[in-house]
Image 1: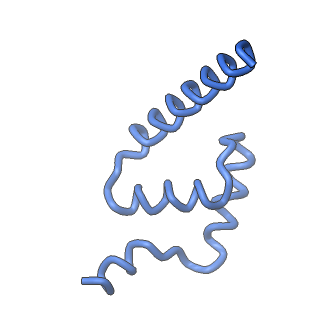
Image 2: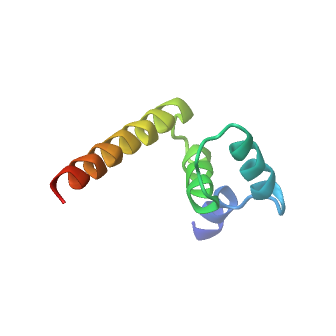
Image 3: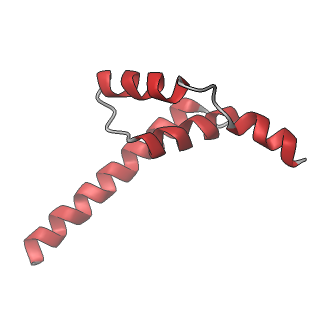
Amino acid sequence: MVRKREKYLTLKPGMVFVLLEISRLLNTGLDMESLSICVRLCEQGINPEALASVIKELRKATDSLKTAENMTG
């Protein structure tokens, strides 16, 4: 079972760097770790559009918390 799982979690060498460059060109704001996690989730069947929506919502929530913190502190 572990071998089967590893198959889905491994990108070909250099592919992460290509994806990271595309990510930078598109101004996604994802670092290598975040991008790798997104790729693994997509490989496991997560809908990429739904994942993008969740990331956007998390960013909005983070921004709101930072703004509220700045106003009180």
